[in-house]
Length: 425
Ligand code: MEV
Image 1 (cartoon, rainbow, N blue to C red):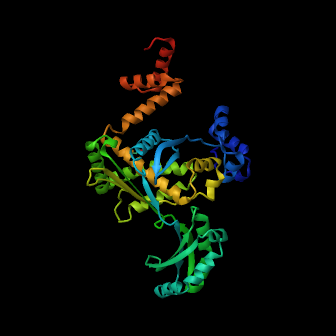
Image 2: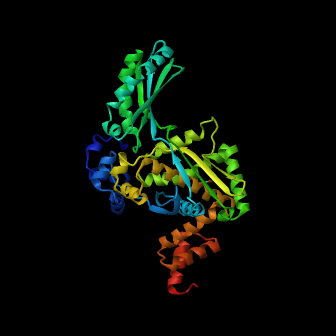
Image 3: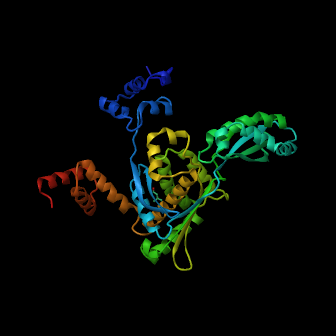
């Protein structure tokens, strides 16, 4: 008989009961069950309440990028990522960008947009005006929803109304602009738009449909820039080639996507370490990259009149240091402590700066020795460690594998045996 994935009340079972079902389903060994059951540094209660149907945990390495100086302040930057080289590359580029005040970053106001979609509105353009006429009343209504935000100086700021023609007839889209201060803002904004929707229905005679935050956070733009001597990146020739690489991203979306992916390597690693909604950040960033109708790079590299390499980045970042998983996950709290950030704005500054540094590291590697050499060096070291090498043997074995072009686990094991027996030099 075919197995059924229809499992009634699966969510009501305990973690162990759910794990038992899955283990039977997949034929997991006792060892595999034990490994999956290990929740690492996430307490079981928290893990089981964060999402549904939890059966275990998956640990990712938590690293720290060094050398970052942003707005004149030194930071150790926590990064969680599965990809080799990203942390090393960020640290390297941060070193190149340390002169003066280092990377300068400026996050704007922390305003999010909440949308209400209204359909079946008669005379929609006139009704759009009516919404504007009632703006203060609507904003006041939204203000009733979050006293903490209001007390701290945030809250609803403005209202924007558009009428969009569509295949289901005219649609009114109302934007509620909310200053969310140090929160990512989804909860506050979603509550507010749900609350103003009935009032908007009353004013327009229409029906509210969607009431939800927009992750196209165009009112939460962060800009960062940096200037460095060509010597710091390996000389004038490399600086010039970095500029050329930046040009390709500007003229070709096929390159721009990879260029931006490299930026997001850094941004998302910090987002993961601090338990941000990284899907929101990613979606918003790529939409912003395509805001002109053509997908463009989020960063640019140029040479200034003194021949210095200058870089700039601009992207929307929706991040929070209060609420959400940030405060629930014990490790994200530690990450924020390592960063020492006091505001969401500061976190956004850091993330943009890391994105810029990550991009410089990638372009520099690409125009210089290519990306694979560094990757392979780390990969070889990892294999040596996995094979059981310790201390100086890690590098010795890695170097041998690289020089002989045999970067494989079985060869690492063989070399380790030889070294331990004293057969290899
Ligand atoms: C790899 O994860 C990221 C890069 O491809 C970025 C880039 O090409 O700019 C190296």
